[in-house]
Amino acid sequence: MFDGNNEPLIEVETLTASNIETKAIEWLWKPLLPIGSVCLVIGDGGAGKSFLTCALATAVSTGRPLPGMEERFLPPSDVLIQNTENPWNSVIKPRLEMLGADCTRIHSINDSAKRLTLTDERIEAAIRKHNVKLVILDPLQSMIDSNSSMNRSESIRPALMHLEKVAERTQSTILLVGHISKGRGKAQHRGLGSVDIVNSVCSVLCLGRAEGLDADIRCIGHLKGNYTMLAPTHLFRLNEKDGFSWEGIDEDITPDDIMDFNAKKAKEDKSRLDEAIDFLYDILANNPIPASELNDMATEMGISSKTLERARKKAGVESKKIDGKWTVFLKKEEF
Image (cartoon, rainbow, N blue to C red):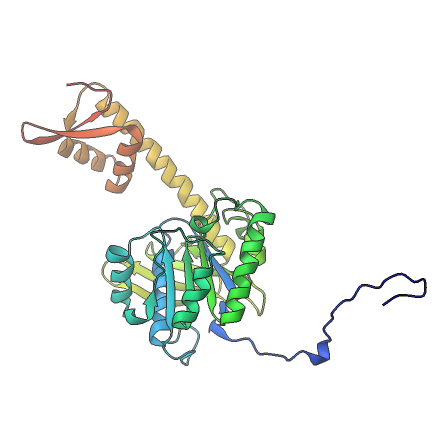
């Protein structure tokens, strides 16, 4: 085909809006997790991300409604969980069982021979094999191809676009789990890696604690939603006595509140850790002492056992049994 000047015209296929069939958005968890899309949840270490994903997997596998959804949103459906940070036999499966999940509907790809990446064809194959409705990839950082970088948009965006096509084709929700960067700032800029990660997905949740709440209450803030208004902040409780329980909503807590509190606590924790390290250097500078004595002294100083253990690792404190008693010393000590 040529124009009036005998120049070839480019053939192009176009779509006309009137010929496109409209389709209502379906939800795994309205308005947080749409079906047929890639979503993201970010939070600091220890925020409860794996507990949250196990709770979501439990709801999907049993057909129970999630908070804010009065009716069953799906019949009991299958789930795919890829978690590279927590072992299945001692962490993931016990949590699923504690939450009451149908473990016959929850699966994982065996990636022992070959590491799974975001563009791996096995993800779509596993979704189709079990008709999976929820895919959890935890953490995102561990599934980046070795030739790619989370910090470059031209590197991470194609992988996310590939996952979006997989979610659309299979009508599943793919939930990526990511860590947050240190420091303060707007919540949308706190995810590790390129800001394109947040920009590329249709819904982003941020997870953490907030000022004025019990220490075992976690908040799920709705940072971004492409298809509807943002949801209020959902709360859940984590403790040894009750395990996991949903605790309603708090419309006053924002994603920025959650991220600011996490940054503040991280700074406080660092200060406590530094103080604990200084304490160890002072106490063990000249002589080793019994471990029980060190623990008692740390308690009197207001240093928690968890902080003391972290400080011992940082300071290079070792232990050795002498005359039937555990004794602690700095690595430089020779005796």
